Image (cartoon, rainbow, N blue to C red):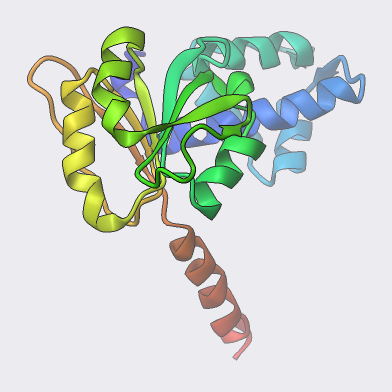
Length: 216
């Protein structure tokens, strides 16, 4: 199946497969059936087989999946060893937490630069990376060619900064600015993951609000 025809919902499940299989591998499990994996993940065996078949299928009838091999194959699909050069902009509480607690290198990225407009923060090290003033962004990008940016900046700054970064060669954005980025480029696709933590919290609140509806 052509990669551009794979649905976004399937792609969103792949990191979860990778995480579950990694846990099973650490537990010493050698193989697992689609049925057992489905039970552990709260999915159906049919769903798992359909998802994996989008990338060629990896199981053997009567055997199931080799946990280590499937974990490695999904890691390859996700590009977890790609080392995509990544910069982070904005080291307030959220940006600092992301830089310190997200293991970028295990998720296909390498954090090579951190920037902030607050000069009082510049020169400090976060996760082994020195914070640079935002004024150095263009020079840094020209020299180091990052392809991904993590935006932990105010909503009002997101649009202009993102468009500047596209011109500087950035092709993917992990955006925490509360502004829904939609970016286009004449020559290549720009990938955006808009993250709204508040939306996730409201989804949980909705669940509580309507928890008893099905029994009324």
